[in-house]
Image (cartoon, rainbow, N blue to C red; front, side, top):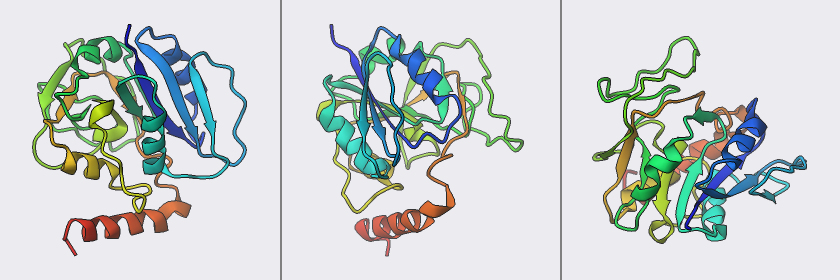
Length: 226
């Protein structure tokens, strides 16, 4: 039976991440968890299905994605942030949708809580209350047109054949823009998923500001915006 390879870069800055790994390792559809550990002193782990890639330095997000896809054993791939939690039924529901005739299937939009079919257009919480808000609505995969909306790449799925290698010059930002802008197949957004978390807890740490700023300038040059 085919499975899903899930790729998660981490710097271990999020509380409860180990418990999250333990939870998803128990899911039948998950065949392996490729954990790209960008810390200097990575912890020892003994969690089923976890392939612990110890980098001993910060290799950044986009290179970690590229590496994880190359290492993946299965054609159905999920890339996830380490700062979110979600209803794990997503894996069985989305499994048949991860095919090579689709591009990328990511979150329709995400500001810390789910986006629902009767409330399209995520609203950013103004009180840091990033909690689960279940609505018991069926998961929907919707055509994703236009530019990338906030949070798309916090959790996304694709067939390995459709991965678009992100250029080495882009380290943290704009990798999601690059794959969406260059996808030759239709992309999709996920709504009605019970998902919560505080996005970008790692990427916005102050010491990464120079790298983030450089990514934006570099991508603007790539796309002729500058």
